[in-house]
Length: 292
Image (tube, rainbow, N blue to C red; front, side):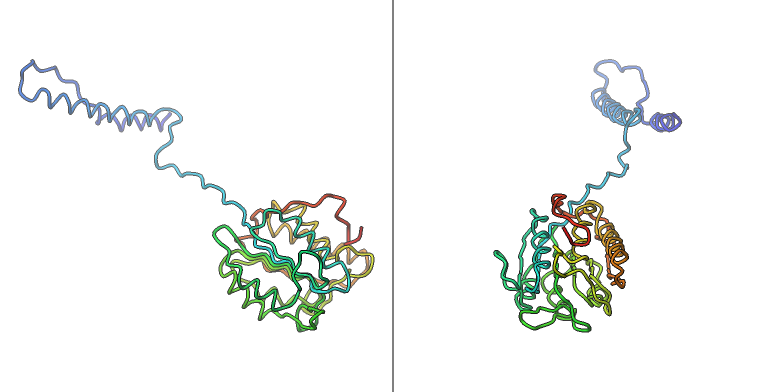
């Protein structure tokens, strides 16, 4: 009430004072009458601003929420020796039906996938060029080699952070970028690829193996935990997904009495809580520790 009273008091000087109407024919009558009408109209419009519920013109306007990033997905299974890697790539692709684009690479020659060679993968990343509202998402799953990076077994080559960084810089620039390096000894990718526009997740420390890629597994343990974490936490963003993945991996390591692999991460605040475009898999598709 005090605010409204103060508003009214401030308007009083603007209200036209009453004066006796001049006689017809008096010079200037029409001009003064017009001026008084304009002043009265202005005062009435200002008075409306003092009505209960009126919003001052200086009130801040709520920001429109930004749509989640649409991803250009590069999904790479680099080892043909077991189906776990291709299984993870194919589930990733199924869970991103509205991706801006999606390219799969397979060392096992899976239908619809290009050959998983380092030149193929890096050239495709370097040519991405995401537009406004878009970003790059690169998921690589395969064996890793100590001190060398991800092992593309079929071509007997390894991919380290250096060439990968160059391809990302060329193809993605400052666009939102997510990199998942799922393999043994991949921890060096997190600090090497860290940037203000990036999320980087790895399956193990630089000097530790990951685990769970043997017969009887549908996915490696890390990939299974990550995929299930995305199913459950995608609306909450990458920090929630990473937290759930790490907790799942630690629980499986304790259950199987495995040495901790200590997955690494670097998560930019810009993407930490942004909802992720993701279609959860049917519950029958998931399995603890990568097993069905």
